Length: 176
Picture 1 (cartoon, rainbow, N blue to C red):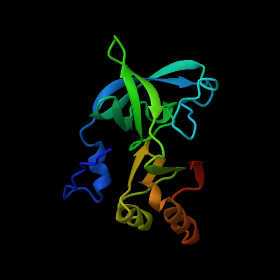
Picture 2: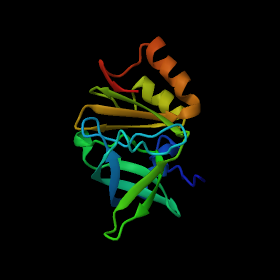
Picture 3: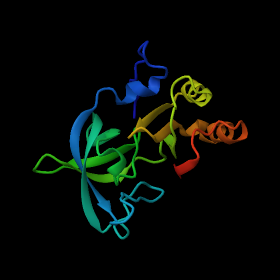
């Protein structure tokens, strides 16, 4: 999939341009009831055994053409059960009601996501500078749920910087 991200002067990284043209949609996805969903295999095919029930969530998406989409925002914030994060790409079919029913996840995922409970993270944080230099981005939800997203090819280096240089932004890691 082609990136047409434009870096605006107010963006510290081109990553933010990838989610700029988002529109709101309802996303239907298979969930397991406890930890959300969707779950998928190494080919991006949905695991419909683990995710037996279908859930729905309001999201911001960027249409990429055809049945391909990029997630821009989980609009339910900390109450989201969605296991996709901004920058993740997926395919979906449109239902008669206008919702999108996910059919697969694009793999390998282009971005790695690190989630923390943290406070006082901003663009001046030393880790934010590394993140932006690597072409990634960050967002906080509910004043403390921090997601750091970096291109997959920089994931290991970014994780090393975070921990070896003592730059991890929070005391509790939610998910890597």
